[in-house]
Image 1 (cartoon, protein in one colour):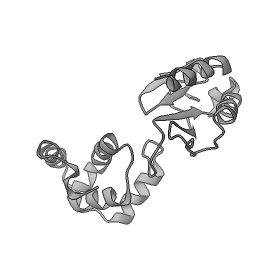
Image 2 (cartoon, rainbow, N blue to C red; image 1 turned 120 degrees about the vertical axis):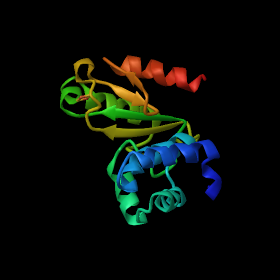
Image 3 (cartoon, helix red, strand yellow; image 1 turned 60 degrees about the vertical axis):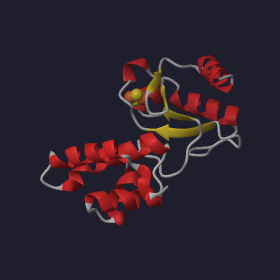
Image 4 (cartoon, rainbow, N blue to C red; image 1 turned 90 degrees about the vertical axis):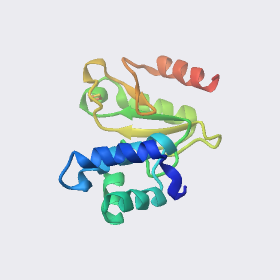
Length: 161
Ligand code: FES
């Protein structure tokens, strides 16, 4: 990634976000999200760029990126499957679902299949407890009331795209 990561319009948007706060550090989460939307993940170089734009030390940004599961500090597969194993999901088969998908794809937590198609991640509650167990795909699509057969169907659909 180069310093040209953001185009002029995006840089204007960043300036607008910064202007909402007395301290530009407060714009860090939206800026990191913009980077991830563009790149799919947030590299060290991108973290340094965000630090330059917002006058925030790299170490602080690294701490933020590695703390929040919504941020990826490594490239992910085309399909990033986040499977919830928190209480409601656990009680309704979240671990069985996670293990099924892990075995099916032959990867463990935060690993990516060799073809670059899938990454799996065990995550905490994603706010869909009433429709547990669930998984989120690529930070936006929710698949709910899952069982192994439904998970199999979803994975097959992604493989055929
Ligand atoms: S416990 Fe899984 S979505 Fe809340």
